Length: 248
Length: 364
Ligand SMILES: Nc1ncnc2c1ncn2[C@@H]1O[C@H](COP(=O)(O)OP(=O)(O)OP(=O)(O)O)[C@@H](O)[C@H]1O
Ligand SMILES: [Mg+2]
Image (cartoon, rainbow over all chains, first blue to last red):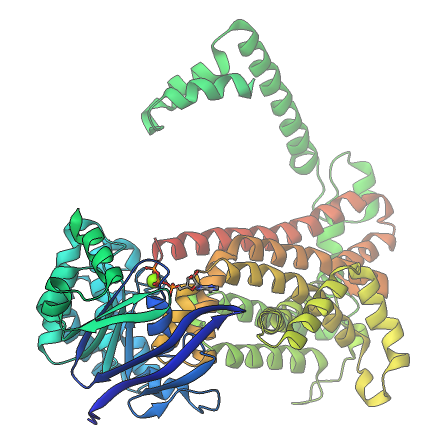
């Protein structure tokens, strides 16, 4: 397994929707094994930034390098990058017509060309890791939100990615289900996965993150280790944001 | 009457088997007026059913000559028992009609097999279709294994109807998928040209398309491309089916959440893997009721080809009573033909209901 020292390198990234600019010269470097938490007010461009990292969104200028491959328009096979970059969405996005197990083995079989037996065995180990092996034969519609999100994490892990992206994985969940998902994510972090998480779960950020990246209005305003960021924010906007989400 | 009863229905707990009789009493006999209407309707229905049974069964003639039928006052099923081979096989030579029957079965088997979800794979379906159509074609046309050649112009009856219908479906459905996908293309030229094409064909009546295919196309095409009129007409009818079905599929695709395609992309699936494993299976489920509807319509519209001189089952029904002195017994023949159509379309819609139920289970 290759583990380049730099997992993600973003330089002067600008992103427009039509004429509306949503990212302004974003620079970010993530080392292999690092855990980054991205936070910031709604509409600040957090989702847009991490969706650029697996080219779900195209960018207009600047460079993005993921695992040493530059994502530009000439890239031959974006799927070679995507299979190394797992993604977990706010609304889970499981495939409702497939069972949990089928959700997990689909991409390994189609993209990694594993045979069904290997893929299923591996899927079961990941389903055990997210503590839901008993639901392997169920359809996503039969699971709770927390269970669906844990399956979504297992589905991404089945591809054995180098990097995991999370876009507000707990914000569509009922409060009592948030902790079961965070627990899985924490274990994943302890196993050394490179992670970029957009989340407002500050307890998680404190415990797991190597760095917190605070975004506002399309720019990175502050970037600091969690202890520094939470106890000693340097920017007015970070302070305002923190007092807002921690205040109540 | 119905409007009054619905209000009371709503307040009641869900219907149970045991409440059938009391419900019946409440809904149909609660007042004198209501009982009267119920009784009159019942009497009318009983009278109609009795008249039909009397005509169709009690006073009917099941075998014999037109003269036997004229003597009796009931239904003359003798015309059907006497001429059924004409109705089923048209002008296909009498001694060779077993071939037409077998060919018909081959097509039916193909259709039934393609209806079973187990066989829904891009590898199996083409094999089934090739085998089914190959069998049909060589049985009907002959020319191998010492079977005499019988030209398409002599094909007729039920075999022709099932052939035209199932070919319309087998050619039309993949075409519909392609059109629906092209219409969603990210390249504006392709998507707008496809849209123009779909809307263009949809604004033409089927009859004009069939006429064009049968009569005008031979003048416009180089000779080697013309082929038999039958195949041109099938292509025309498949095209007509495809443009409607493409729109049905597109609406199914559009009602899928964008997250489905994104999740597939994030996992590294390529375009075709995403389309065939994620998008189409879900779009077909969503679009199932209108799809079944469209298929039933396509089946019934096969009767239009009679206008182009094809001897499909309605036309061969006509021929069955216009000769041999059976002239006055057209009702019986039409009844028989209607029964054939009913059997087909009813099984199709039951199959649709079954699919809907079984697919709902897997995507609650
Ligand atoms: N598909 C789109 N078309 C046009 N504008 C978009 C699109 N997606 C996002 N935007 C705009 O881009 C900006 C950044 O959006 P983004 O979704 O990245 O914010 P976010 O930080 O993830 O917010 P949230 O916390 O609400 O998820 C917003 O102003 C949004 O309106
Ligand atoms: Mg977002």
